[in-house]
Amino acid sequence: MSGNTENENAPGAAFSDRARTLVIVVAMLSLFGTIGALVFGRQFAPPPAEPRDSYGRGALGHRAWLETMRALDVRVVRWTQPDYTNVSAPLFFIEPDRAETEASGQTLRIADIVNERTAAGRITVLVLPKWTIGMIGLVGPELPALLRQLLDGTPLGQAQVHWPPAISRERVAIDTAPGLLGPRHLELPWPQTMTNATAVVEGPDGAFIARDSTSRFFVISDPDLLHNFDVQRADHAALSRDFISLALHADTIVVDEIFHEHIETRTLSELFARFPGILALAHGGIVILIVLLMGRKRFGPPAVEAAPYGRGPREVIEVAAGVLASGQKVERLAPRYIEHVILDTHRRLGLAEGKTIAQKAVAIDHVAQRRGLTPDAERLLANAASASRDTALALANRANRFRASLLGAHAVGARSAGGKSPVRSSGASAPVTTPSAPSSAPSSTNRSPPA
Image 1: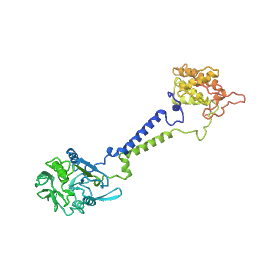
Image 2: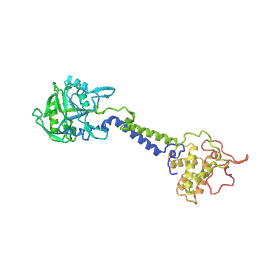
Image 3: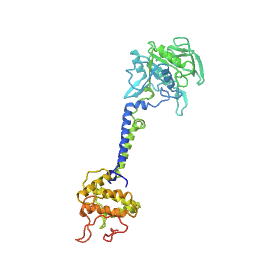
């Protein structure tokens, strides 16, 4: 046995000192990770990207447009809260998936938000969707019913949306009419325009950007002006920049994400499957691991006392059984036995000095000197490290005799676990049997245990 502390050798300990330190370190790291997730969770784990929002990097996303506006000195804020009361900058609803949604226990409708902001003198911009992604990733035209739902109830509810008769993904070159933001050169596939509304940017077949009578509500009819694969074409990026600065008179805009399902989930499976909820599962795993490791060791004495081994010395039988079970050599067994004797003697003397086995041996030698005995614990421990096959048994016998002389025959014969009376051999006058060191042959005075 190579351990240096009694805690590592204690039969009832669930963990060694090293394992206990490792568990504490892992638990503390997990705790700090949870605190960091609670404080900085939104920065570490932004909401997952939907196909057509300012997080999306695909063909229908607007991440490139958002980063381009930032590069052109426009401050862009992505809004993920269902409360728009404090949003004073122009608010963009870019290709919403629906006209109303549920968030934080309340129903939100785009028309209601637009009307409230218009009445408060705040600007709102609605970018209509044009394409939709099917079940297997195929892109097709958006349902006209959704466009109608998005416009109904707003100040531009009377506007009509138009498309070319044939659906085509070939880009068409378009020159807009002169005006505040024109003329501009655009390249759009299957252009989507609006009529029956005041045009801000107008093409041959209708308006690409329209406004209401108060200039507080704007609608961009064709979202390809903002898509990742089209924002760099023609004058699309310049048109967006001039629209924000000249038409909206703003240098900061807010992009809504609520109507792209970017809301807090209340499904437990989704909560624990994502960061930082996954940390809760990590904590649970640590707790289960600790319980399983603790269950490997018994706490306290057994419920039922084990049956006696018979008339042979219990310690000799235990050591012999250990040799037979693990096949250890005598030169390895003797140092283990000597360490056991020193630890057992230190405990039964009631000594508090010493943490390592070497310090315990020094404390035992001090007791031997006070009692007028030859101190031998420290020398036994030193000789055990270099024990050979020829000297191992002699050292073990020497350690046993040293313990017997220090504790007395009666104390040594007592069982170490419970301190009960020792096992006596047959006959009233027979002496008490004492534990002895392992030997190559059984003693003639001790009978073998019953089979």
